[in-house]
Image 1 (tube, rainbow, N blue to C red):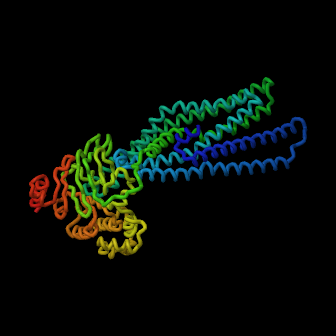
Image 2: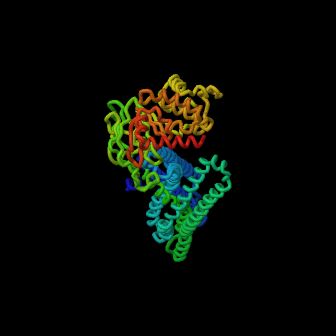
Length: 585
């Protein structure tokens, strides 16, 4: 039973142990509170007997002592209840976020092609928060109240089964109302979450495109669209809250009917002489307290339904297969070989429905040489570079490094031998030094500075107020494109990996910056296995080998001079770019 419960609510072993203890202490707290009602009944019974028959008043000392014992026990049980229903689960949910983030780190890029990033963000933040609230406010309260009520109900049957039934019948009926509406409510909750994801997407898009929005005077248009999405989410949330509120309040009304039935049944039985007035009074005291633990549980029980959906989404991420492989990687040299490689995106991946991008690609990028990948857009250049680094796995054929199949190596182990410089540089809101050190976390300050100087970073860092300790803003917002690119190259220099992948690292730079960056690249590429993705033909003039991709196959390969002389696809692309340059002039 507990294994099924643990899976349903995505709990760790420590979490399910916390649930058990939380339920125990909640039930004990409720029972101690009910015992306080019993103590109050005994005191009231003594006073009634005094006024009815002249018996002595109860002694004050036992009453005070009993009250002290009651408050000490109640404080102790509440202390334990709070720890096992709140503190434990705050730790649990923090751990869940870290586990999901760690799992995402190990998943292949194909997973991110299938999943919307806003949806993943909502899972990590929103779904985990939903689970946190369900763990801390619902599970312990609900099951603790059920167990305590069952014990009290069983005990009250010995005093008067008719009054016991009259007092407790409304509890299962109230919960039945909520559980019977679970099916119709699930689509409502799903629609609310879908609208929340749309809002997240719209806000993220607006922030990412804020410069383009302003440059094209589209502020009013985008704000109108954003307002429409937010209004739709608000309407859907309001509908969900309204329906949920009606159901919960209906359950509340049914629950409180137990007080009325207890009063009517008790009055009837007292009038007929079947029970004593004090017995009826004891049951009235009991029902004044017995429903209290269910108030919050009933109000939040719908969160359990939402929590199951949230747990399912979280579990789906954790069950995604990671890119596994051996942690042993001992290549003989670092030649990168593509041997009749084919690759196709699966249904829904990267926005394409089963499209085959590569059909038969074979070439060798030799160690110590620069191999350039050229071809029209959509020919598969970026796909080839990602297969080389095992961001994805080939569906047919084999990619090897030094004779070792990259698909057999753990991606993290494999990537220790790779340095990658993308056209779109990703930097963190950290110092210049901190961003460069990402290339090798254990590097000394002297090694970081040496890599920075080799990448020609000194020229712009010297103008910064704190030098290499200057914060550069989110994604390097305080830097120019050339400065950001040089930091990226410094990072790759620091890593000093034997294989370098370049995704047109200088395409978006001006002539001055391109010259500086090319100088830095020349230091990075010396003696390495280099694969360059090139869009501009002049970028590959000094390449040792050119591989021309077209329609998912290698159209031709050879040195720049050989391919230009052959008059094939490369020569055609070269002539087109020269013609375009002349038109621009």
